[in-house]
Image (cartoon, rainbow, N blue to C red; front, side, top):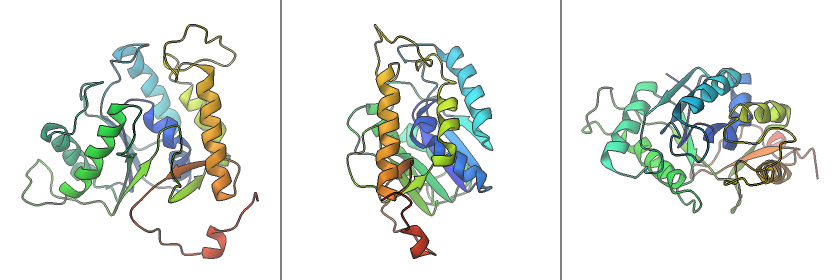
Length: 241
């Protein structure tokens, strides 16, 4: 049984959008699993073998307890029964208390949007006894969404990742086929992620989320569930005003 399951559409998604939070969760001794829906084989740069090697390196640096890949088709993730059943099975097998994945109202990358839809629906469906799979039914307590690079709505909460931001960046740089190296000229790049602008946008995202929570760097999340705050004074304390 795992405390947390984080699901991304491609290798590097989870690291980019909630890598700091995962490092924070591991620092709190939670048992964390990551599931990638595809191998990222349709990406403009690299290939499945290169990305697998990068994934292994990033996974080791994250220090997570388990990582699985569902081998859906990159660039063609759709919210259909076969995909849902694969996600339902992994939820039932790992039995997480809380599941994180993309927001289902994203507009930039269709794989991200469908990933969010599939995971959100599967969190509920995994608890239905009459849906049969290899593992027993299990329904996580909560499903929590993370946005893409641009924060377009007020988050339900943010996680302070200030102590972990530098390591998060180092982990993302493990995906060398997908992102630029420090000081690398990005002239002629064909993708946003393999540009120096990506690092600026990612930093802006962390700063914006951090400012919302009164800390230096943060990661934003949304949930339909209301957080149970045990210390409201500490929760609303602002280090940065």
